[in-house]
Length: 162
Image (cartoon, rainbow, N blue to C red; front, side):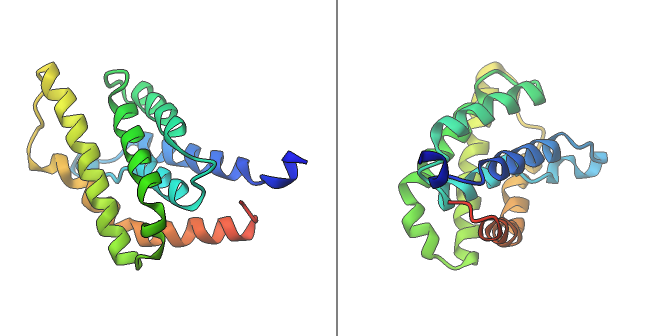
């Protein structure tokens, strides 16, 4: 039966809901620019771990939800997350065998591309970045990647998500 083959879909959805909540969580003024891109790194993990279940469409929908949540131009985050999902799906076999430090560097590169796409769209609208701290979410996400990877991998193994 098809339902026996796939299980744990609710865990995947719950991880994305938690990532969206972390993106909406209020932070002090000094920490706003250091907020990791939670939705993007969770999407990268699930695209790498389960490429047949999480892909470009999920990235697009998550991006639209993130656009609505953050009040940005509709499609700004959707385009960035869809491109990240595409890149992850193209390189997941190589990325899986990398050590966590190399994975973290690759995640940083993907998120710098994501931030550049957002910057490009904002630039077309006439909204320039505030300062160099615009790029900080990519670096904080890179630092969090090894821990997020280990936690999500353990959850995936515990609940036999395949």
